[in-house]
Length: 161
Image 1: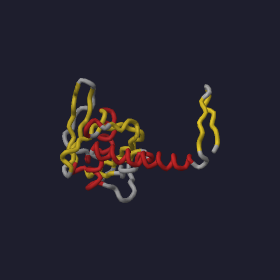
Image 2: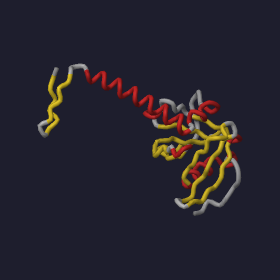
Image 3: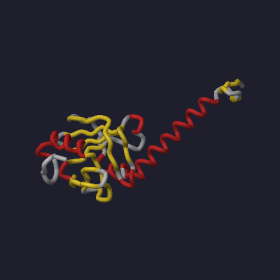
Image 4: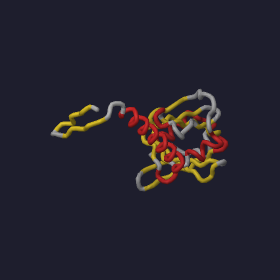
């Protein structure tokens, strides 16, 4: 046993070695939480047909924000990329449990330009997973479309706000 002074007269008595149990419990909780978010937001559905087994070579945007189903927002945690093969999506390493990197072929993506109350966005839908919508900010979508060039799916429009 040892005592830990937390300040303001609070003293915590803890068993030596208890920190390891708390660490394991915390990691387990994080693992379960990440898997739950992946399932709730639709990442699990996307990973079925679109999981990337190898590496990705293409242009990348780091620390981007996307929105998936049921309002699941990955704020400044995503790496988005483009290559001739398709759209690449991968979260930061700490969010990887339940979130394998994805590579979605261009021919399986449809893009719709949306103008709403909170701004301009792009909505992506996927032919093999019709129930999942991915929403990107306009500036992010514009950059990806410019990099993708002729591979970018759907309509061409003027990139102006």
